[in-house]
Image (tube, rainbow, N blue to C red):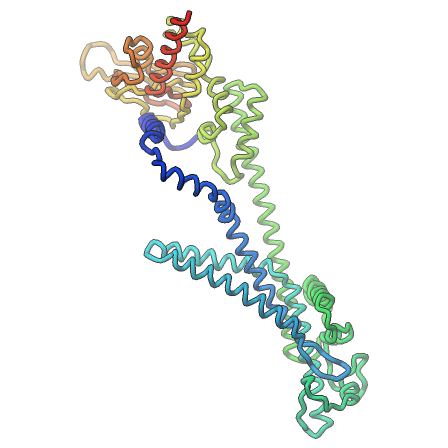
Length: 497
């Protein structure tokens, strides 16, 4: 049960405010039109805002995933021994990345504008932390193998160009030459001998290491983007999953750093996956434990009140759909949040027989008027109290009738020093009630309009919990309205007969 002790006065004031809202908060004609216009678009706006953060994260991931396209722009032309550019891919990469950058810049400016001021500064810091976390999520969901494959492709083109340059440094007396495809004066046979695709010849001193596979696969000279990208993606995935253990590197230092990065990054991703899997399993276990405990406590409560299986299953099903595993759900939070039909069934199951057995109800012949008693049940408010809490103090107005459905309460009077009788306390348990004076005042009143009856009786006793208590409160104004409606209907029926 909750540690809060709700006050019946607060409940009544809240109910009165809800009742008066329709009168005091009525819209003028222009406001009605404006409200209707807003309500037309509100579902679409709410739906967009609900998915906005997720869409933004995916948009960022898409923007970052465009960067590897730039590494595929260089294309090797083996027949001319030169490096060209894939202009179509270059244009697509530039335009796509520019569009995503503009969209994100607009989002950043708008958000910064809305977060001005001292209060917004705090919110801005919180949003900044969320921004960093979302960017971390972008890095996590980024296609890492594709990025590594793109790096591998680009580095392969650079190593081939380095081999060509070295060949000319050794065999052409240091003559500088450009390997741009716009220049055509090259000793192609020299480059074929010094930078072979097959097994290096004895005279060759250049070792391609892990980049030799890129040449042999034909990816460097392929103009088709998808076959090239998927092959490089597979290369990255294969070496990440094996922590780079199959890589045969040369003595080139940057090649070894790249291979070392693949091994470390693959290991970190593996540890990240294992860690998140463990967190997920722990969360799943905790969720199941909370659900079993919550369901067990709820079944104990339903068994105490002897609910039938159908109603019990409906309550459990409502709890499963309404609340998440991490929500702190107890009976005191569950009952007020039930669907109206289900809540009415719960109230009637717990309190209908109790009402029928009240002496004042029996003596007045109202026990046979079940529609009246059902209306009373519908208006009952569930109340929950911790032990040793005051519900009503001596001298306070009795503005509600309390029907005890679980637990024990004490009623006592101080007498204020008057009288010689020995003071003693009485206890009220399940199926008993407190506030009979209010019932008697309303049910025996001869006023023409009971709903406007101003006075309520004053309590001559103090009502204090001894244990945790579950009760249902019948507020004074609800009782007056129900009884007034019943009298009007009864009078009309009498006149008709």
